[in-house]
Image (cartoon, rainbow, N blue to C red; front, side, top):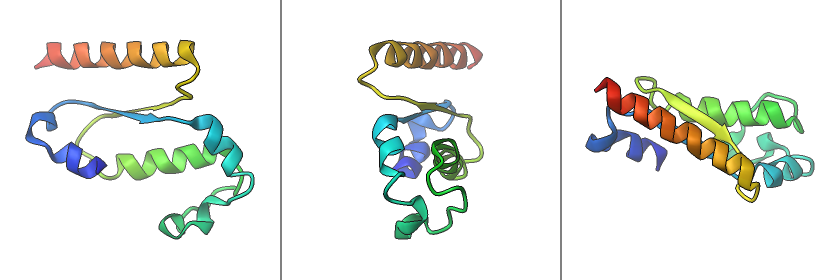
Length: 102
């Protein structure tokens, strides 16, 4: 789905905000289910229960899909209102800057 969105004509020249939500659940889940144990993620070579390495693995997977575009990853837990507000403000600023450059 991410690749399809990146290829939409309307989005070809705009940066992409990658929102990796539910970080709290991911942090808990990797304690009991190693990322590499999931068939689709068999190439994961990081520490099995490392939140940072796991997050970076997924960011890398997404950014490799479209190397011609700037991808701005944000890791968040949307139930944290303050964190969500900061992320959305950053997305708005990024979009405003990108629009001004066109």
